Image 1 (cartoon, rainbow, N blue to C red):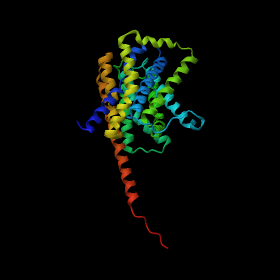
Image 2: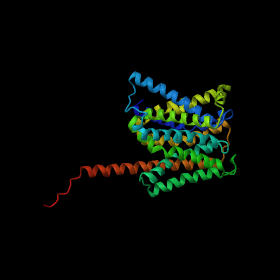
Image 3: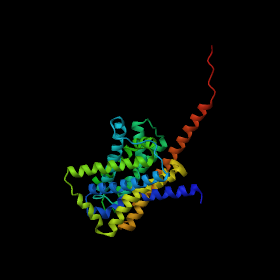
Image 4: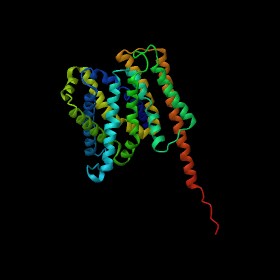
Length: 328
């Protein structure tokens, strides 16, 4: 098997894995509140990733780019790392789990599938990114697919409700921190940046639970059954901890574009597991909605990749083009 094939396998695996947090979180939410689950998830995640990172450093397989210093001079990076952790990770996870009180896990997964479009929307609003007409059409197609899913008369949720807005807010929380996350990753490295985010997510929600007087001991309810133990291992260790290493592995072999395409499998993964694990209904409108969302997202990503490639070609041509001589 070639490195490229291994890269595609890793990217597809991550795309499928990242579609199931809201599925595996469902059994745990039966015995604790969403905010307690978020604190538990990221506590497990930062311990897991911290062990992996330190073992990697000790063995020489990982290297630090720059030390993340907790001092006043580094306050700007500390602020953005905290925002990425508390908003981009913690609030994203909390709102996603909270929405499950109102909508199905498969609906949650499809709405979360809009994250790539929302990330580029943030780029459009804050960083001068531009959409083509065809990309706008694809984005509208993806939202149309979500609308079809929401308005399915055979759905368990019986149409649009507050849960859909909460879930959209979850996706927006993750998307709004994407550029800050990328900037920190360039400076400190992807694994170190994720570790810092998980630490801030755990500390932030731990402080919140302390202020509101939440019962931390309810986190021990995860040990009430083997299924819940398995779910927190999948959620905290596999999805939040180890999957980012697999994602980086895939990205190094098939590129950002390839891994981005594989992430479009998230809605499909959510739907399939929700049907088989949670017994959700399979309706014609739900199948159509998922097909529309995935097709629109794939087309959106392809168009974005083509535009990026053309821009790079133009820049390369301008770089090597001879400069006109000025008359004396």
